[in-house]
Image 1 (cartoon, rainbow, N blue to C red):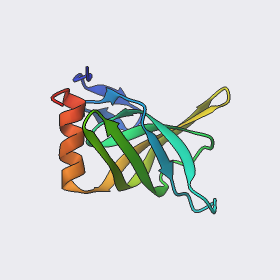
Image 2: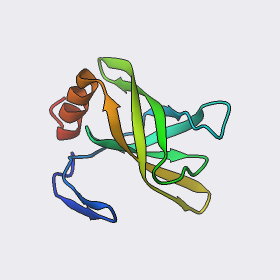
Image 3: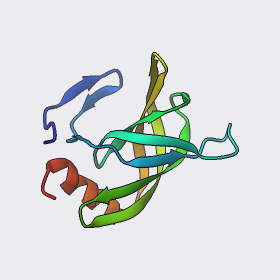
Length: 118
């Protein structure tokens, strides 16, 4: 399920196990009055890749919410994040976010989810 290999990125090596999943999410960005709708593409205990209608600058700190809807698990994760990468491809925009403040219960859930143990 998850990819356990280490990946070389522009920002260094990432060792977290990621898992593909599409969950509804939202990003609160200071340039916009309302939250920006988003969809997760993959997630780990360290961060998340989102598809969004707008780009957000690398280095920006943004709060997010993710609606977890996975079998018997249904709850909303709230986290503070930092944009690690941001790019667009045709009409789609993508932002890679690193969790900088995440409740331990949510982190434990995401670890088990990414590893495929739940």
